[in-house]
Length: 518
Image 1: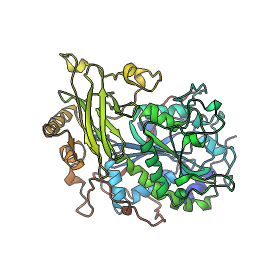
Image 2: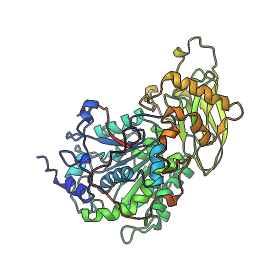
Image 3: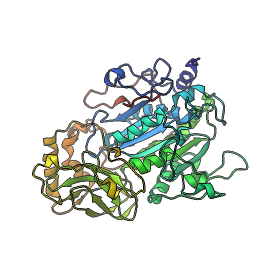
Image 4: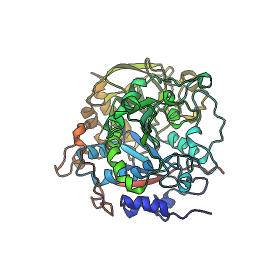
């Protein structure tokens, strides 16, 4: 028998979540989603999996506006993250006009938030149980964080519909950065989660990615912006803590089929796992404290998507090259350009060389420098190896067999691509490319401000973006002090959407288009 939906409603009421977010079961819903997305993604027991997109551009994919995501409640009994995601959505919307950092974030980023990946498990979990496994698994008894294809070992576990939904999501949207929210510990854990020979070791050892320096940094951003995670205090007496509140996943304990490794290897997404509460499912009276402890870390981590390098991969005629295989020299991990030729990579300050390869084009490389102030924009021009009379028939497939240097067999159709065409026509795209190209005759590296000037036509004009001169438009993120140090969140019972249809922040609920496998 299905449990009454009283528990989630009670938890939501603790944060006074606006009625817009509360559906018939006390959970995230919206009346018009079924009309826009007839193929809904559901859990095994028919509960829908929702994603909220919070941005100034929720219905568009403006050029080089990166996608970042949070996924919570992967283990159904780890409920704190599920509630904090709703809290975060409300905070972002309510503080757009009063918090400069929040405004910069929503103006420059598309933020995707999945409050619950395992709603069936959550329904069977028990409030007040700080440990144990009741509600951890999905309705078939599968641990969803052991259910993804693995980089190091063959994972023979049957793929679950919740797992398939996330995989399809990654294929349709190119995410740059991701956070996976868990509970039961207090630490930021980064890839790899697995290692080549964990069956034969008597102790855990680090399993480092080619981007270990970046992952250590990203984990520390959250940890040091958390009220006490960075202190490394263990959750239980007699157990060791974590230095600086961070750890390599495999060094903690190795696991096969984890989601963060899958994001990194298969999706080109840098994902970090955040264990945000010692108690997995605390009483609702504790939720306000957990929001206060985690709020700053959740906000700051999102802003890290604007570190490193981004740009466009194009041919000599200014046509975008989709699925170009890209690699940072010295970092043996391939990632890919989107169907519009865009790419992003988070990197720490320093000098780098990016290498690009695509079928029908000569290999290309560009050297660039990363500073700590703003993202570097580095375009890549590739020249054909042969003359193609009709450019529309040129191959757009990436060199999967030759250049995917991760030791795995991946079908050519599985590469991640950005979805949505945005509001820019092909003619506008080409004319904008040509305009931008004029500046590249002198240098292929330009500042963020110069880039925004050239590409202002891709989204809203800068003059339209200004709110009567009340706030400053940021070229790069405000300092950490721009995020309010106050721990409390002022919530209203209804969202303030009367901001003007042309300039307001819109919250769109997107359902995955994924076939349910029973």
